[in-house]
Image 1 (cartoon, rainbow, N blue to C red):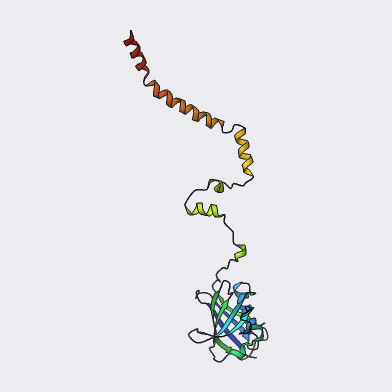
Image 2: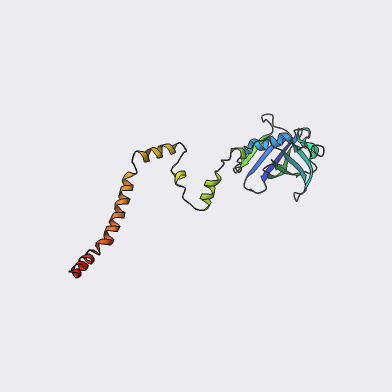
Length: 216
């Protein structure tokens, strides 16, 4: 039984490389799932291999979980053995993972090993270089309050948010006011206002005295 060694790279991340050894009679679904055991991605996503030219131009499509409109126009990975699509010792496949949030890969046959190793379970990850980029599922993404986001975008300091304010704190803040915790600040403000008025009239103390002297 021949073994195919495929070299898999991200189209936009050349430093992330996987090499997978797989039996020639295994399917594209087996290869698809082996790739994502090595990336850590969820394999249960709509994805496709395309028979490719040397310049990565896409040809016939081999699909996993295809959409309704595609079902009658593609062959399925689970029904497609790798050997049925190998026409070149350096056969290439263009691979798109997860059409909802796609990543594109280049898959190239780099070696054909004539005999399988009885001690290896295939598909087998022969080489792994670089960490696959993280994927954040939209369902797990934090949803920001539009009001807070607008304030942050304008560069405003959101006092309540920065102080970890929660709605239940409202009653506590009101209670603090009722207990007179803020009365001292109010008294200081009133006292400052009185001082300002006092200073204004104190400058004119001699004015009244002078007027009285003129009357007499």
